[in-house]
Image (cartoon, rainbow, N blue to C red; front, side, top):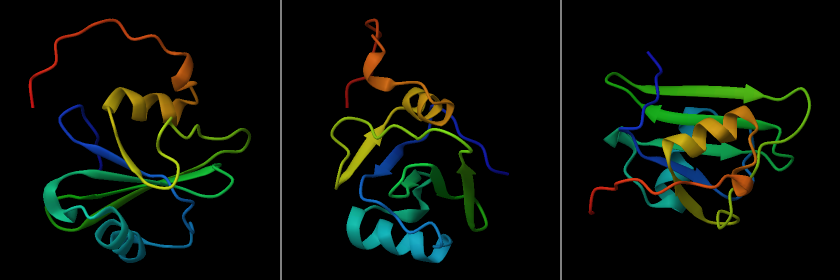
Length: 116
């Protein structure tokens, strides 16, 4: 079952991605360009050039799971600092990205964060 939570880590690949790629092609991007471990439960996020399509790739207990969304109107926002490379997102940022909320206009209140 495909589910996302605040317990997972989310990594956005900032370069435009060919949305014809499936789990195999996207996992190659994760290994070669992002340098991340695929089977650790992390979620990898990919956008196309027009940013009207998004794919999320994750490994669950038995194989890869792929979530895909195509917008009928509008675009997904590319978060600040993500262009060209990869950027770790919070779960709340992912939810706002999928819902079309402008992340730059959000003001966050202070919260406790566990030291790394």
